[in-house]
Every structure is written in structure tokens, then in C-alpha cells.
Image (cartoon, rainbow, N blue to C red):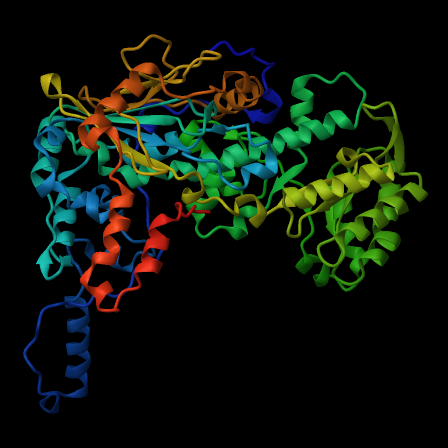
Length: 636
């Protein structure tokens, strides 16, 4: 795809050395966050006659019983450690995948190919950001998952631990079936390297709703391994949704930046100003550190600021460089309350950073008094000092809009503003040494509401207010909304190759090994052997006896996100599937659906009144027929 490349976005990225090959393949196994609880022995013990033991002997017996329950194969150090040992990667899958070995077809055992559909339908939140004909989505997060999961060979120890664990798991009183032989072959024949290949469109690039953007294939003879880590790979939905949402949010703010100036700004400058309007406050809204890190890194693919510094730090491990984690020096409520006089807290922060932007939460007591008596004077001092200091008022409760308008008008009354010209040629008030930030319960709807009101009043929103978003940034990120799915597309190898697909309503899949092509006006999903340049690249390949992981810097992914997005609208296909794929689907339909048509529902409905329970007056035939006739119930 020939995208025009915009100027480098260097101002957003701090340069760091790329991860060395040794670091690149370092183990990054996920750790559980729970504290270790006591392990009780399952062995039965002979009854003890406590009457015959002294108090000291009873204490020693209790200690002995306690210690005997510890799993010594992990050692006392692991038991008393605040972290659980790493979960064996063989267990990083759903139970039905782990135990499906006994009933897999021979051809599927031999070789399998799967597609991951990042978004099979539009998420409801997309309608708030763009029109219903815009189906752009952005892939991000696959590189992090692969590095955690596949960057280190499987060990015999992991296999042993998995087998020990599963022997104590029961289904209907039967020991859980686990195919150890396959994993022993991975260690013996592949040196522990998982022999699968993962292809996808590059991270930060644009896909469209309905496209299978990731493809997973196993080496011949290890077919089931292609599906083993299905659930882990599907977790890419969360970072992709966050990245996509943030990119749509950037679009909104870019439009606002252009609305508030008649200057001929470069695209890089428009991106920079827009990216500074939204501050990531989501850390305290997340359920665990990993979620906070992954989602905040995804937000930084298009924005500049985050309060989740652990995400900025973690990004070094995955990308070799830092996404910029800019942040304002800020007062929390507890810091204001800690001072005897409220005004002393504001002075302390302003004096600590006289040449910077500082954020002052103003609603501990009286936000109107705080602005009038403390923040306006500090802003006037900053103007007089000419050091570049800016005071930001942060109302955090009550009528936020009223408080913002009050702060801005107070600043105008003291001359803390300048007049600029909007894109429509009309004058707008741009604030100078005093601005505002809103961060309580913010979302895209509230942001639009505040911006529209300020424009109506004659203020430039871009130069007056920015927004911190916490739960509103990560809310409604659910796999079910996009209906992210992994589906079988081909089994077998050589002459035994057979395409596979399903026709389930709303969950249909595409047969065959595919590629993604970007040609304006032509289908994007094609069979591997059809014409067209394949946009998919290899993210992981363990089929050749070595670990080959695609690792791009964060700067590269961020630039791709910024540069490809706008022009991707032109490549949005009117229909996804090529003639070759449609022919494969029809062939499968003819084979599996009688006469190529679904089973007749009318026949079922017609038989209902003839059921014996209906004749006996037990079943309600009319109600059953009514339910059978109604259309499908839509999820979400």
C-alpha cells in the first residue's frame, strides 16, 4: 500500500537503544499477582492421641504438619515469596483446548491453519466517534503477547508441572486428559521452540471490520499447537480497541485544533497539539498492573500523556524504546488538605516549577474562592516573571462546566488571555497563564459538550481546557463488542489439505489460507495463491528450528498509526471476499447444507402441533411456533 509519509514524529519519542538479541529472546512469562496461600497436604494421616503429647510436642507436631503440606518441589523460597511461581505456558489456554487431544481428526493433528477476526462487527462505542460507514480499526498489542508467550523455549519442567497439575483436575470424576506426547516432541524434536507461524498486518496499521487480520499456522505434524494459545492471542482485542479508540479521539481533537486557528499548521504540529488535550488517568480504573500497562501503552500509540508511568517503563521491554510519558506536576486533594492554609499548597507547587505547567486541584473547600484568591494571583505572577509558567485550575466535583467558565472569565478580567482567529475568520479568546483541566467522569460525549459550549461563548477550547480520562477511557472495551474470534480455516497438508469454515449466523468464518490486499475498489481478503500484494507480515516463526520474532520500535508503530490512518479510508473495501474465497464457501455450503439451502424451519413449525405433549395439553404449541418464527436476537 502506498501511503504518503508524514514528517517524523520525533518530538513524541525519546530515543533509546533497540533491545539486544539476548534481551529480545529473554523469558517474559506472566506472573500471577496473588499472594501465595498455604498449601495443605491431601494425604490422610493416622489419628493422633493429643492427650499423650506435651504442649511443646503439640507445637512441634503442628509445625511438622504445616511444613509437610508445602509443595517442596518448588522449595520453601517459592512458598514464602510474595509472588506465585510462573504459570506453565501449557496451561495458558482454555480447558477445552488443553483436553481436546482424544477427539481431533488425523488431518487436523497433522496441520492446521486458523484466522483471528479482530472485529467481526462494529462496537457500539464506535458510533460515538465516527460515522457508521467508517469501519477502520487498528491492530496493536500482538508483539507484546508474543514476547511474553513465545520468546523462550518450552522446558521439560513446564511439561512436568502441567501434568502434575492436571492429574488432580477431574471432569465428572475422571482424571483430565492431557496429551503429553505432543509437548515431549516439541522439546525433543524442536528444542522447545513452539513450531507455529503467526502472520498479521503490521502493528499500528489499519484493518477493517470483518477482516481476519491475524493468521496462525502450525508446522506439519503439530497441527493442534496452532490453536493451543487461542485465548492468549485473542487478548489482542483489548489493546487494539484501546489503540483504535484513542486514534478516533485524536481525530476529534485534530478537527478541534484546526477549528481554533487560521494558521497553516503542519500535520505534525496538529498531531502534537491534539495529542496533548487528553491525559490518561486510567491506572486506578484497571483491575491489575498488566491491564494498566497494556492499555496505557496502547493509548500512547497516538497520545502523549499518561499517569501510568509503569506502562512507559514496561514499554522498554517490548519495544526497546520509550513512548513519551509526559505529565503535569499536579496537586492531589491530600496535598492541599495537608497544608494549614490552602493557598500555601498552590504556592508550593508553583514555586517548585516556575517555568512549567502546573495543575492545581481547587475543590477541596471552595473552588470559586480558590481560583479568585489563589490561582489568579499565581497566574499573574507567572505572567510577570515571564518564565513560561502556566497555572491550570482543576475542578473535580460539583458543576464542572460552571467552574471552568468562572475560572476562564476571572482570567480574562485580569488580562490573562490573547485574541486569536479561528478557521472561520472569527476571533476567539485563547488563555495564556491560566487554563483548566477536567478529569471527573469525562468521556467523549462530555468533552464534545464542553468544547461546544466554550466555542459558543467565544473561547478557543484548545487553548482553554484539556481533559483527563480514567474509567471513560477503558470502559466498554469488551471482546463481545467486536466479537473477536479465532476460527479454523484449513486442516491437513499436501494432498490431504481441506478447507474449513462455519456458517453460523453472525459467526461465519472464511475458508483457506488467506492474505490481506489493499487495492482501492477491490476485495481485501483473498486466498494465498490469488493475485495481489500481501500486507501481512510474519510476527513469529518457530517452524525452522529457531525463535524468530518481529520486533519494531514504539516510534515506528506510532508513526505508522499517525501516518496511515487518514488515508486508509480510501482503501476500505466495499466487499471483503474475493471470488476465489466465495467459490470455496459455496463448495462447502453444497457439501454440508442440503441442496445448498438451510434446513426448512417451516417443517419444524408444522410438526409442533403433532407432538404428544401438545396433544395432552402440556406444551403450548402456539407459543412454541411464535418463538420459532421470530428473527434472531441481536447481542449488544
